[in-house]
Length: 355
Image (cartoon, rainbow, N blue to C red):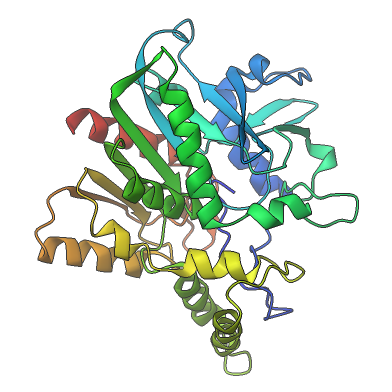
């Protein structure tokens, strides 16, 4: 999910690499806090009624759903494109309940739509919009068997998302209301890896925003989180290393019964550092200083970019915040009253205007 960390290890089945489980109340809180500007008090099931334009194209015969957010009455006004890569999990772009609808941007997109048309793409073969009652407690969409759809699993790969998103960008840049002078790609969590990969492969991209990613790859995030939680009797990290050994032996395996496929985890575990370091366009790296699975690796990236005198890299470290930029309580628990995503988005805008 855009702002839900996906890199945990299931401690009841340590061979399963999948997302940590979050309560529906927390997820709903995040949706409401980030997207109150387009939440309505009635049940509406059209994306246009939530302030989006909905486009659909084909990519290798797959339907691809694109939502574009623009400033009110400026839908046709020429502006640059900001393409946002959301994080993990098969979650519809818009979720609604009896009180209204909540979108998948972790921030209020209206702040950025002053300068940009903002685009986001749905997960493969996942509904664009869905009633919360039809989803799981973590907002994920499951098929009639209770599993993630097979068509989604087969495409839930870094290679697929990269090539598909590049095709979407090419499509959007052909629209008369998209200018060609500037092209921003941003991503959070898993989406940061996708964004970085896209930026490394397209010369058209002028700015990259890399938020809450791990420049050394997914597996190190899983190991770091496991070290944090393990005890003398429960040495989780050792089991993670065994799982990684199995993944390396079968990196093309597509069985998803125990979480993400080996192929997906292997792809997202290849260090983005290897292509981040070669990027010459302006790059903004954002992370929370209490994000246990990312902060040491982003600090390392920062040290290395300083050492290499890579002046195109900027860093925003949000003191005392976790993976989703929430603050923490004195006991270390997430303080959901300290929502900082809108500040993060405004900092993006300030950086973009300066660069």
